[in-house]
Every structure is written in C-alpha cells, then in structure tokens.
Length: 315
Image 1: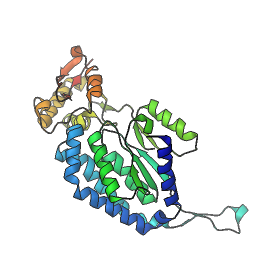
Image 2 (image 1 turned 180 degrees about the horizontal axis):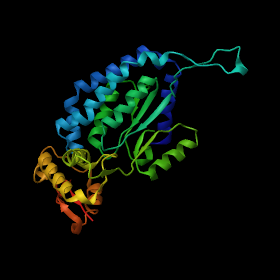
Image 3 (image 1 turned 60 degrees about the vertical axis):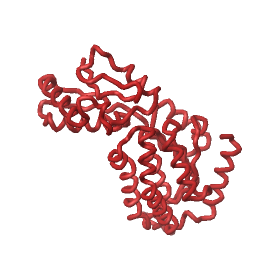
Image 4 (image 1 turned 120 degrees about the vertical axis):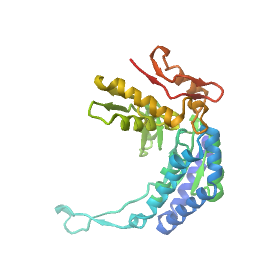
C-alpha cells in the first residue's frame, strides 16, 4: 500500500473521530452488538477460514477463537457505561481551590497488527477493547493466514464504514498490537517513537514447566500436553521445555506419552482434529529443531499436510 493511500485512511478516520461520534457510549454499544451479530451469523465462514489456514477443527475454532471473542464482547458490554464516568481523586494542596478527577479517554485512531497463530481471536479481541474505549481502528491481520485475513476484510467492510473501522492487508511494509519476535517488536517501537505513539507489544518468550516429586504427575502431564500441543504448539505461552526432578522423570515420561496418545491417537497426523503448521517456512524451521538422537516419543511428520507429530526430546 502506498504511503499516500495510507495517509488518506488515517486522515479519514481522524476526521471521523474528531466529530465526537465514538465518544457516545450508546454508539460504542451498538458497534459491539453489530460485531457480535457479524460473528454469530458468519461463524461457519470463520470456521472454514481457520480450517484452510491452520486446519483447526470446529471445536477448537470455537474454543480458542470465536467463543473467546464472543465472551470478550459480553464482558465489555457490562461495564462499558462506566467508561464515560468521571472518578473523583484527591486534589493536591497546591491546587486547593480546584476539583480533581480522572476520566478514561480514547487515543483516537488506533492500529492493530495481529498475528497468524490465532488469527480471529488476536484480531478481534483487541478490536473489541478499542471499540469499547471509543477509538477508530485500522486492522492489519497477518499475511501468513490469508483465508482469515481476507474474510475479516470482507466482513468488517460490509458491516462498518471505513471511516470508523477498516482492514488493510499485505506484508511487512504495511506493518500496534503485535505478537512475535523481539526483532520486529523493536522495529515497531522504533517507528512509533518518531511520533510518540503509545504501543502495546505482546512478544514471544520461553515458558518452562517445573515438575518436582511432590507433583500429581498424571495431572501435570495431562495439562502440559494439552497446553503444549493445542494449535500444534503455535501458541506464544505454550510450554517450551520441562524441568523434571530426576527421581520422577521416568514415571513422568510415561504419563506424557499416555496423554499424547489419549488426546491425539498413536499418530496425530492421522487425526482430523489435529492442527497443521501455518506454512512451509515454519514447518521446515520446526522440523529442523528435531534431533532424531534425542527423540523419545513422536518425531514423525507429514510433508504434504505440514503436520508434525507431538514430539518429546530428552537430554
């Protein structure tokens, strides 16, 4: 997208925001209910897009994407009228003749850059909060999840005027809600700092699990297997590695293997409900991390479907 076209989009939204329309809480409520209607009436289309991009089952699509989005809308509709209320605070002695208060105020024109691993949830959840706060929004969904990105663009433009909510698609040049690497996060923050634009970055990290001899090993294994292999491990807070007390390691491994088989079968790549890697680049990157000498369970893959079996590495 050319800079001149992007500037027109921003200017159009800034002009609309300055009319004060979005400050009216009744307007915000109507927008949230319209978004709710949009999701409920196009849930099958959303499921189909998630199936194309990530091979998510209808159950996982609802559990991890549309269900959570609808829950966020219901949650935000409850306190939304309080957002326009002034909250009295103590006045400093030096300003004793005045009245002091705190009042929530929207930023104005906001940008949401969302990731590919939960392309519906992590696009619409921050959108809900931005609407509830009284902002206009430019959405930039991920180019790695094209079916979901294209569907969101079609639906948002059908249900909302572009001067209020709009979607732009493309690659990094269009790229501030963002989940991803520290490298990209630094670049986003560097660009935003030129304009003193407030930024929220949600970046990936390491998420170890610690299991000692006092743990309920069967329960710990069940929870870790669920949290790790949901969405084929493509979750920023999924457990990355497990530190296990040596005295319970062998027993714990038995429980891990048991729960993988119970949840996904002997070969998860043959399970219709098991998710695939988002694209060939990530499939190749992750398979490259699997050292066959360290595999104690799994390690197989399906090149055609870009699926990797739940895998345990040791040593």
